[in-house]
Image 1 (spheres, one colour):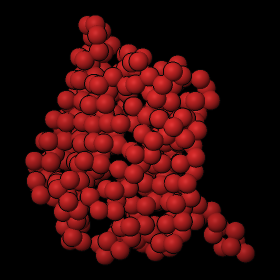
Image 2: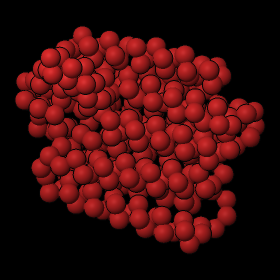
Image 3: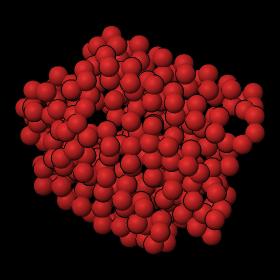
Image 4: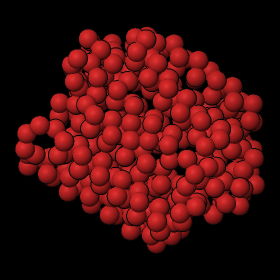
Amino acid sequence: MADLRQAPTRRAIDLALACHPGPTVAVTAFAFAMAAGAAAPARTAVLVGAAVLTGQLSVGWSNDWIDAGRDAAVGRTDKPVGDGRLTVSTVRLAAFVALAACVVLSFSLGWRAGLVHLATVASAWSYNVRLKSTAWSWAPYAFSFGFLPLAIALALPGSPVAAWWAVLGGALLGVGAHGANVIPDLQDDQETGVRGLPHRLGGTVTSIGSALALVAATMLVVLAPQGSPSIGTAGALVLALGLTILGTTIALNGGRSRLPFTAAIAVAGVDVVLLVLSDWVVQR
């Protein structure tokens, strides 16, 4: 009887693990913070967070459903589907339910914001379905991270747009996050036939390139807005540089550590704070 009671709880925990909880929570929090920081009405900020959350859930679950065979082949015990703790059909259903909710929530923000946000989600799905194994593996990250600020801006009253440097900065963050995310899995991916851009460039070039993309994104967010950078902004830049150096050093030492990706998410968090404190929303 105890096992029967524990089964739904265990399944819920495994589903949470299969959605890639770290990036899912981080991107959702970033989107909500950007909306709230742009003085969005409370309802709008909550809807932005809900739309982004369901989109990220669909992306995470589709990734583990599509990669189930590869994860099983390399013995990924941290993947509930590849490890056999969840069935492929369960995670596939969860992905489509989340995607359906994302469609409804996205269009509740207005048709412009809805279309742009769903385009970012479709881009992320394209990575899972096909592009992760091509030289264009970086493109969905650049597109999805780059156009997320635009989707959030369009959801605000008056449908303003995001500043060009916010879009470009997001794209650069996406490229940097892609490299940092893939580096620990290079060997496993190659064994299962995945050959994205990082696999073709190698770990060293990818680590350095990812670091440069993260630094460029932060520099852009610091220097592009009008006015001179404040002391606080300069301090945030130093923090972001420190996190980037730390993550890159760990990545260059090899191994399967996820700390470089965690550092990349932290840099994104610093950049989001800088965005919130700047005039990244442009009225048309």
